[in-house]
Image (cartoon, rainbow, N blue to C red):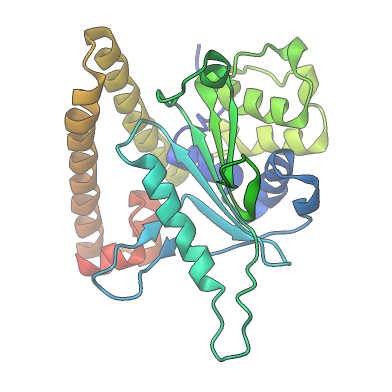
Length: 295
């Protein structure tokens, strides 16, 4: 059956639903379903998703979505399609950029920081849990704690959503977060809007995700993203069957990523040669302006 809605696990689909200016109400509603009561947000502004280090030798960070509330809290939202070596390390590294942004020049700054939330939507599960309940949980919230398991610092939080663990059916959805997880996991399979999604936010979400409303350029970009995502899934599924997941993730998947990056570079070079604008090249390839200018 032909899909009616975009696949939110693709880079294009994820940013279409949550990362565009018109989609801010959707992103805020989703974030508020995850955040504690004292950090509920009424507005957001998108920030530059490409963060550079302190000098040219420092590795930069490129986020899927990076935004800030009017009161200064910052939110990094990442979609991770496949297991990656040192993924947790990368997220901790990413969290340092918004923290450093808060540093103020002069001697009067007291080092008071605003909260930073790093949210990962994972199309896989971690395999380092010790107990069965922990292995089957969907939402994992991580903060700095002391030896007595008391929160030492509550302004830096990592929230991971292990999507393969979410198995609720429509009649089992209770919370707003349940609704969002069900929406993300099954969006591509829907042929009509389920009854549970009749409020204005989800009506907008379905309208945003409707394939028939994409223009030609967006459709071509989505198709490329979808092919990349399917390559990921096929490689990982084959690896599980063969019992070689670790080797494939370290080898084949990284090789595919490299190959896809080279393909993007070639496309960007051709578009530059044809005189296309930087904005159009960014839209078609997903490369950053800095990467394109260096070609």
